[in-house]
Length: 195
Image (tube, rainbow, N blue to C red; front, side):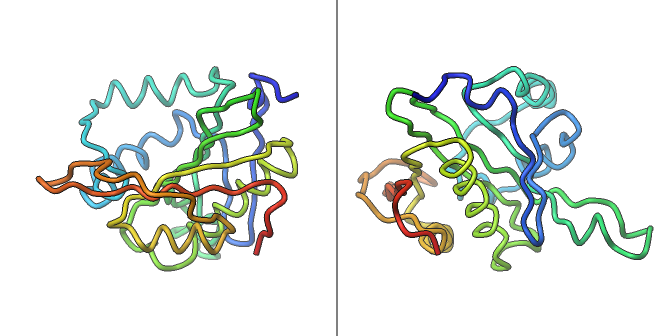
């Protein structure tokens, strides 16, 4: 049986190039910049506008939410750069497990990477694989599901590389710039092959 407080002790995850650490107030600058990026908002279907106070409050309250896990994606190369002047860590975005359904051992997944200089380099696939492995291997979840908008085939390919399978299509799920956009439903089970 999965606990409704599954994420009370949120782990920090590492990959060869990334550190995924619990998202919090210290990530405000990166989170705020990502929310101002028009392409990030389009790819995630975000119509909402946020104030600095809302973002600070949200980040400040995440540690108290034990039914979800939010990680900041930090590029390690920046943190380990030999030149101290370039050693500032780079916030690339966030990855989230949310909508926990403890009775069915399932959870939702989403990721947002700021497009400037990081898309197409495999960071999304790497972060996705780390979080999916954590969900199945460490937390004992059975299913991870997501939705990706049809105008974001790059993300769909990254999810497929991580082992997600297309499960369906939600027609006209988002209205963006006056046009309707479909959402592709994808999922992965704990027993599915993981590349």
